[in-house]
Length: 361
Image (cartoon, rainbow, N blue to C red; front, side, top):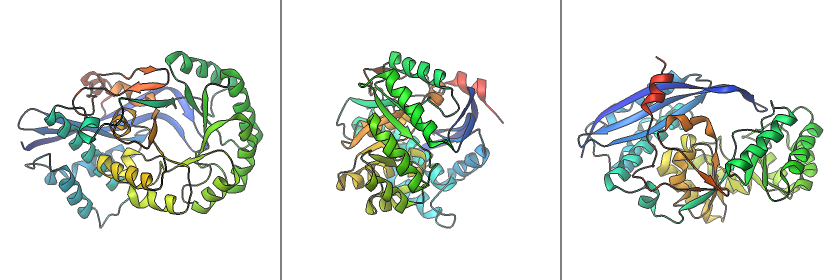
């Protein structure tokens, strides 16, 4: 089997209304959708995204720039192709657009490999479970009123979630505390609450907030300080009883490694697009397992199920609905868990209707 075509399409998926965290104002997600075609009619699919479609064409150019390394190749040589791309991006570096392009290509190739085998990808990787815990992450934003937040939390429960994430990181720490307190009272003690600060605080501010939040039995406090403040992460972790989660904004195993070495986190949160695709994600999860550190995947719910189903130390996947319209298939949540699909490949295929509706030049 040979790769005979590499195609991309760009879409911009609008949100129903603008949303905000401590560092983001978001109106849409722009996606580069990648199709790797073969001479036997099978196609591998994946995507990369940017918030508000900013610089999405640059992502497209970077991904398309590696076509010469794909055309005519056997797609089952996925690791070899990825290593060739790794060597080629050396002059431009191992963060940002280059790694995002590698990730998108690597993910599509693995989707194709599993389709060739006519197996779900998580079984190709070596399955360890058929369902995985998830949490609702597509709401409870800083931009929402308390009434909106409480109503949405009850909606999440009605959808089948038993865990959900609230954003903190406002200018007023006591406002964050009050919002978490009200949410805890609204959902009761049996629903898991997670909090995400989106890098809003200094270490001392995060410790002050965390000491207040310890009363509310949080599953974790995520990204309490700037991603590059490794000492700050460690100081916060040592000062609080709440588990600390981080890692979504670092690139490759070389970004994850110092987080482990400096004891920055109780839970690591690799992002498929930033980490380097499935090949590098597996390496990162194995590295974390060596230090008995759990991982919880960031965004990319549909794709990340393949990792969650084959990685014993993966404790959950983030469920965010921004990309659901990209796919013909849907995710079902029951009692807080997602059943991993048994369809070949990743198990999700792109919707031509969505492409036609939201395509941008």
